[in-house]
Image (cartoon, rainbow, N blue to C red):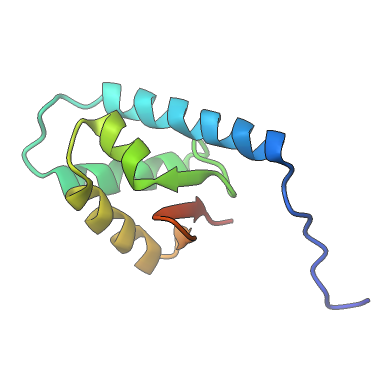
Length: 104
């Protein structure tokens, strides 16, 4: 019907592929940043925002606290703060189990 959104639920293999791609992108981003960082929340927020804007992290890709913390070699606290800020800015949306999806 007109006005309805006909988005399909991604298949399990597609979700796994997206998760693996997101993990690879996170690790690549983190490698480009000198460790340790003085302001990890800001560093993570800026790096993720730039990756979303330039398309390295694509709409629908999953992001988890743990994957980001592992990639940037930080605790989950600055990751949580960075993700909350990006959610407020509209770059990501919260999902269940401490995960987020990149928005369109």
